[in-house]
Length: 266
Image (cartoon, rainbow, N blue to C red; front, side, top):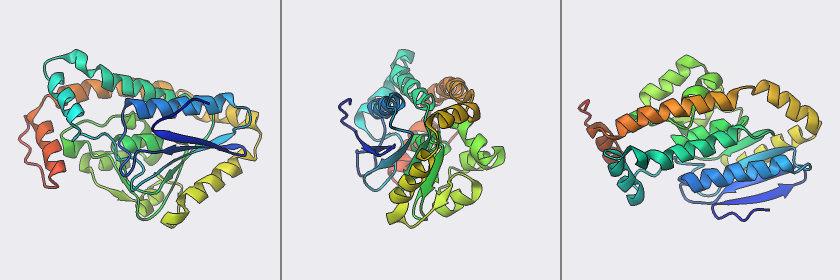
């Protein structure tokens, strides 16, 4: 099995477990998304694995991109004058699409915050087990940004167009209980039971015929990866434009300072 630096990979009978290990907030980058995609592809090749669980260490499930990271801030500055500098972000979306092309069911154990691209990662799974303390948010507009990670395609399919618009336009944080009511999550249990419940659901799935599962899932998710690819291509264009604005800089700064942003529309 491939050696991983940002995730742990285990097998529990017919269930594979992928654990994000970048606590406390589990910010994602190209390397993390690439490793998750690699692990899922390994599970696809393993005849013993019939379903998988995506979980995380630390406080958050995945808090999205770390816009306060100096390396990322340098990249944002380059993006204003050098379009080629967006290639790493584009590469991240290429890796994200790989996740959507995997063949076997995934259960996400969302025990904490799933923010921005972290929400996109949670939504890439077939099912989500969560808890009242969890928070789901597409906080892009509060950053002066455009949604990414294919969320403009995946979130409306999951919660309906109008609920997706509400989540996008307000950037509000949705609790685990609210997420379950609107269909963003499937099960809500006490926080200390989230992973066990996710493993239980994956084990229930894994009791079924592996060939039947793969065939049925392919039918149910037909074209999803291609829709995500088209969405990320568009999202990247919009993100590239907004990344060069004063509002984006202010949104990132305001978020870091935990205050309301003073947007000026430029």
